[in-house]
Length: 394
Image 1 (spheres, rainbow, N blue to C red):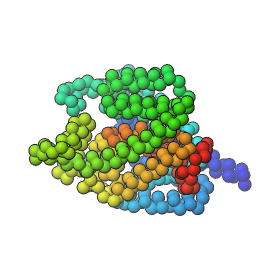
Image 2: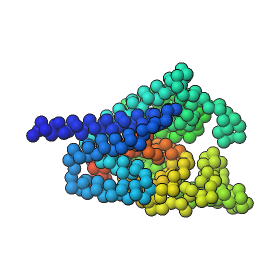
Image 3: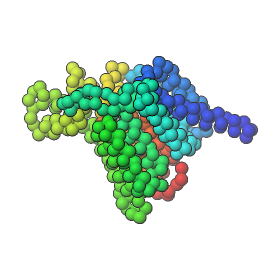
Image 4: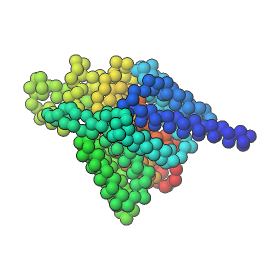
């Protein structure tokens, strides 16, 4: 009997890690110049692999009930929008039970880093992919910036930011001051190639937050910094909702001569965000603004734009988006009381970045490391011990 259970356990874990590897490879192919003709089929395969892991994992009654209810939610989302991302994310998170998430994310980190290095090498050697892109980047002049095989300079520095954030989560507590300096210099180097201000600024913020969180000499400062991370995450979502609700003011400024203080504020904010708010109102129906949101969205809500949190509500609906945000904040509260501060840093970095860019809001699960953290903690959250201060090791 024990031997049989051991075989099932090996099958379950093999399926999970194979699914994760495939998801990471899908992300890498998407970042390259190659168009993947079987991407949809690969998503179906990873869903099946995570489903097998769920089927071979033991859960409590409460966990089974939660999985069932969220699968119903995912099904409703699928039939409402035609998108399968919600049900795929739910199955992945459910499959994360009993997984050593640090080990899993180390696999994700090294596989992603090696893939990115390969893409860069293929481009600079002239084998595959373009090295640079010359165009007007919205600053009033034509510029040449480096893409190094990833199609766009922002996409290149985006991957540097994502890998830096994951590096800090995995090794931040062991890093010395000079390690932080080296990581910063690497990011500055990529900034000189890409001129991607968003990625550099969020990376600097993540480095500063990580440095404060790991400072064991000043525990109160660490706890305050962790609380600040939770606050900034909540404000990132709330601020994005406010932007979506007031994007029409940019239209009124241009076409109706509105010069009220509130309109001027959002106009200047649009300029600071390089025209990202204006994109929402450059169509007849103002796609992406709050007036186009609904409880579970609709198939027509498929417009692409950069504002990540706005895209989440627009693409998937108010209910799925609110549930994801609530789960994310609950994980952060749990980590705050358990002193798992690196998880707070990683989520905060993604939350702030998602205000401006939509890297984590896509069909690609392995782009968003917050899914992995929710998967690591969801079964603990169901135990109702979010506020218990005992510091546990996962």
